[in-house]
Image (cartoon, rainbow, N blue to C red; front, top):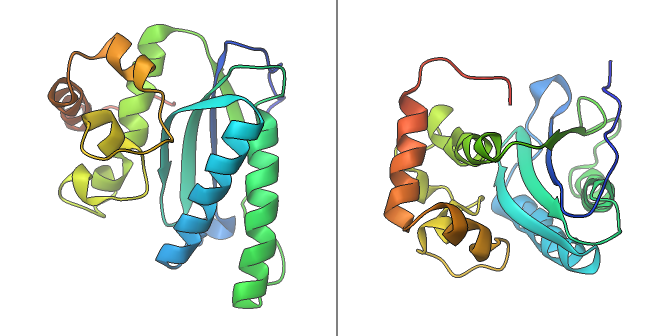
Length: 185
């Protein structure tokens, strides 16, 4: 059952996520990831949203977004993934649903939850065994948080407000990967 969507309000943070139908991969090649990243850039700007953390994984995705204006943050998911689903269907002659369900969303209200969610999102590729070092995964904004890549899909003011350096954030993420119990984020 799909959860009720929270009201979308300026200044609030939202965690969006979804996975492929039957846990199947939704990204098959680099161009798939890059298509979605281009769409995210386009729509975060036009909808007045700030991307805090994101990670695209082979069979799922996570976005942590702040709504800065009046356009509902959920429009980002609708526009990006409607476009992507159409492109995917054309590229791979795919029919039927691509995703397990409509996107899921949770409003994040506590600062501590925000930070743990950032490290959870960024830690996914290592936790799932896709890379040994998170810096090897190009489909997240982890490298921007560290200051190792100059990208536009990150709110660097948010990063600087919470961490003194990229290495401090790296340590925070690695500590999170060592925690054996995972909260339902």
